[in-house]
Amino acid sequence: MIALLQKWFAPYRDRRMLTLLALGFSSGLPAPLVFSNLSIWLRDEGVSRTDIGLFALAATPYAINFLWAPLVDRLQLPFLTARFGRRRGWALMTQSLLMLAIALLSLTNPSESLWLMAAAVLFVTFVSATQDIVIDAYRIEILDLDQYGSGSAAGIWGWHLGGTLIGGAGGLYMAQAFGWNSAYMLLSFGVLIGMLAVLMSPEPQVSPPEETLAEEERALALLERWTFLPEIPRRIMGWIYLTIVAPLAEFTQRSGWLLILVFIFVFKLGDALLGRMSGVFYRELGFSLTEIAEVAKVYGLSANLIGIVIGGILVARIGILKALFLSGLATAATNLAYSWLAMSGQSTEVFIVAVASDNFTTGLVTVALVAYLSSLCNSAYTATQYALLASLANLARIWFSATSGMMVDALDGDWALFFLLCAIIALIGLPLLLIIMKRHPLPR
Image (cartoon, rainbow, N blue to C red):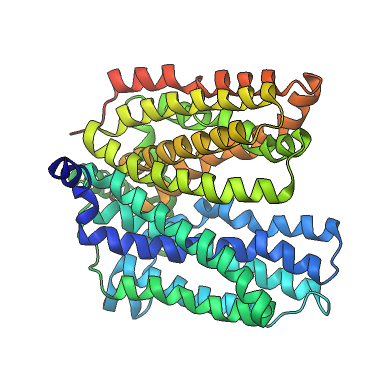
């Protein structure tokens, strides 16, 4: 039994997993500082609910970071790129700016200048979203294909340690003891964990595919023959092609690329609908805020972290696509636990089962999906292509979750039927995945 467990957990014994854990920590740390904890701070200072809600707009950089991801792939930073390499140089720059941004946020006071605080929050989210681009690219390039599952799991675990545990719960304890400004200042130093990981880790040694380089050379040679244009415009057009056009063109030349994009878009529709309405559902059943917090934090988080670890093992053992299919099927099945809860009423036991099972399968499917998106990236355009694919996956969550309330109202508050529909919608992507598995399998 011990030998079997050692075999299953072997992927996590790689030293690179510790690096990804620390980078995940640095990635997750800012999240509560600009979302949950920030809302509490603003409310403590007497800011209106309307204004607190508007602060959500400051999170926009996380949704559109693909717009400047090409710069991370192509732009060389003075001194840093030459000294530390392309990925490590960008990581150190964004982490240094992130420390500065959180520190500046800690010096603001919402009761004195709400606009100044909003600007500081936007600075944090912009730099944090840029750091995410670098970390995702680093993770993909530092690992082999069969390590994407365990690498994704390590990064997500680190995200929860930094965001949920230290930045979230730890930040609240610090705010209670020292005040909000001091808490934010102290937490800014948490980014040092990610910086130390970068300094102690190697630069990825990944060479772009020969066919990709040849295609770029052909395009640049064609531009050079456009002698009717001055040299500077030709160089600018060449840089734009390599930075923006080439990553998109390379992906659209692949077999089945449109099917893959449709699958990525629809895969988590059911989860998006359920997640948006789950809190409203709990309250309508009569659960108190304390009960919701205890079940979500204790049972939900624990189940999610276990699911993340097992998800990494599953990807390593059976492959990315099979793990993605099984975890997607399990996610749809656990959506039905909420229908069970709706029919059971205010049952704490069923509540725990529903939340724990949903969070467990969410951990499974998140690891598998991140691993799959990582596997689709060409090493010549890692940052750009991953940011684009991740943004596409998030669009369903952003767009379709907005209709969840209308769905419940249209069903006259029939929660059991709503969650049954969520389970059915969660199955939409699986037939597409079966076609992908048959026609467009990943290389072994």
